[in-house]
Image (cartoon, rainbow, N blue to C red; front, side, top):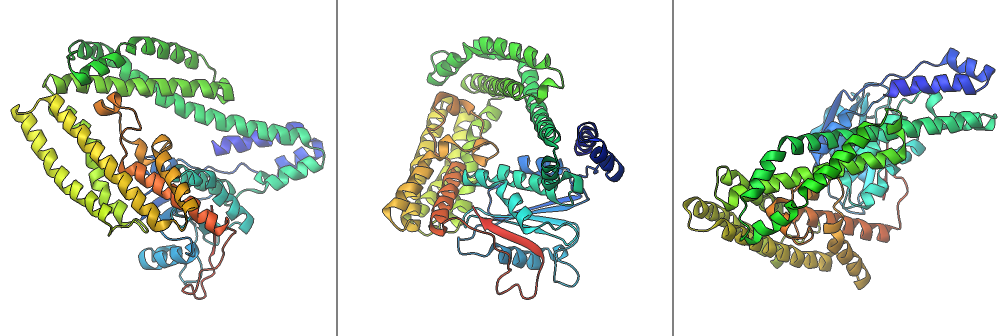
Length: 494
């Protein structure tokens, strides 16, 4: 992709940039190669990255030269020097990231560091990959809007993608060069460059959304008859079954609408995929089919579980999975800085976790023996998730009281915590739970989960830290423990 784009840019410059300038470009520039990272290392000590999304995205980013990409996150504080923390971590855990003389970062290395609590982001490079301070700030700024919205995974991807665009960038790709063209009368050339880049990026996004939609549409189409058979045998007298059946009544109409969208997007030419209006259409197709794909799974699980049919145990495990994930995440939540892990509300969460783990085993055994009905088991699961929601909200108040210095800060943190269920953000851990039977029957904001708590907590602390610090310029030193280390790198606040 990067190589073909460079070639296209050169051709465009030759056509539009004037005889003398175009000739110079063609004589002096060769297309930059597209090189995937030679290695991607992720150390997510902060626990905020969704690696199922992060790793494939980073491995698909093209650099101009073979580059090792390292991502490091930790939960610090607003007063931390992120540069110093990254250097300390590298010396203790990855000495290969440091040059043989101990004074620089290793050649071929690009480190992207994030402190979601202290609200810092940093970039560090080997001497053969270093860029200017202004460009390091550019890389850091690429993810800051996403970081401010607690979209840690997407912000990290955006920052590293911008780094790939700037590290070892060929001379003819610099925007300063485009500015020179503009100043020398190349207005048409500069405008054409911008147009071409936007089209290529839009086409890439459209293809990704199209692939996502095609996968879901294929799944729904393959299971269509089975979905109808499952719906036909769901007990209408069940409280859960009746609501799932209500969702199913519009299933075929929505499938037909998705089919029309499928036909429309597949009629688009490759060039048309580069238009913004068509990206919107492709996204609509992907969203519609993904929702249907999730719903047909819920219909199948509802039928199997309520009828205690073949596969009921697997269906039950899927309903329990979100709660199990919450229980497993409680200790990590309480271990975070400023999470008030020694408080009474923290003790209540731990007690609930231990008791509920025992309950889940008992409920499964009672379902197996028929001592409780599937509907009763779902009621118990609902009650457990409701109780956990209450405990998490109680602990949120404890965290707010411990962190906020005044009522204004408390109101701001409370707003972020309460709003977290509505805006988890694509790629965040809070969005990995499928709807399930309970998620289909109850509104999406009915249950407050551990991932959602983490999203709200990180966002609240970030907002308060930014307000206290008044933003943040670049920091280039490595602190008192850095010694004579002078590797290329800096950090800034967001």
